[in-house]
Length: 112
Length: 115
Image 1: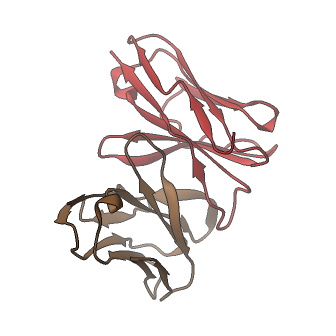
Image 2: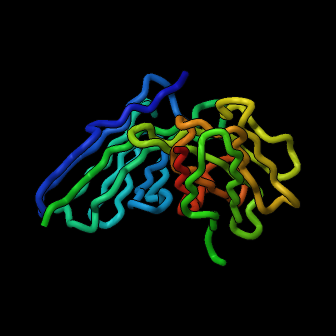
């Protein structure tokens, strides 16, 4: 069974701090996606990374795909209370691009 | 509507009853997914529909769970003889095609509570 492990599971920080969350696997993924989910809503796609070593930036969020396409990270600079939510990584495994494999998520709370 | 809608938003039922959950995907999206999300469990894949192909039912946890998609649009997830462990948020997602990098658009979910 292919798994995506996310860490940390929970994170509570003060406004203005930086943070990094991780998404790791022993398997290769053809692409990885990061979603953010707020309470009472479904996940919303933030970014898709495809190429090993790829870095994508979305305002204060920086996403990186590992060189071997087995892991990814999300770095948030100067976190704001609006960043609060559940961050989920999900990937299409090499050989099955129809069904996403999901991590359990990192629950982030940014306190004002 | 512009997004994926699900109904009901909340459902409380008694153990042993049957429930039906509805999903209206984005118009024109050929792929539709059902997931279950329990507290601390992340998203658990249940079933996937893609166009007129046979659905991928590999994630359904038991034969009490079934789903159909009529006319390539609306989908209904049915849980028969509900059990307390079925309590969870059931999420539906649709995408333009079912392969590649296509984004999955999620509905707000149905929170099911089995007493």
